[in-house]
Amino acid sequence: MSDHDSVRLDQWLWAARFYKTRALAKAAIENGQVLVNDQRAKPARTLKPGDRLHIDKHGAQIYDLIVEKSEAKRVAAPVAQTYYQETADSIARRSELQAQQRAARELVQYPERRPDKRDRRQIRAFRHGGE
Image (tube, rainbow, N blue to C red):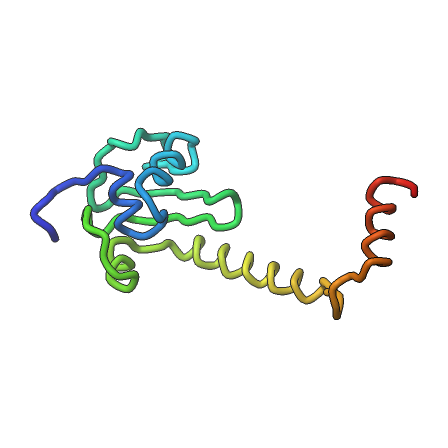
């Protein structure tokens, strides 16, 4: 464990590589996308080992974590993964979501070429409801 007993929530989220910047982490916390021990928190709230986090990144990725280390230093991704332990429900939920997204991508048919001038006119007419 580090020489710090606690660290700011926004710093920890940045150091654990959930957000690219502290500003993004702060915005997510203020918008209620990050819960600490099932309660809304402020960016300056201190985290200690054993705290439970719920991180909702716009429904695309939802994490339920238990804080293992309270570090404020941003490190390589494999090392940052030692800062927390993800719950089994969270892992199962994310893998199920990935399988659904993979299946949805397979259903989409992409065109073989870019639209030419005639195709663009037809697309424009279709979008604008007429000629």
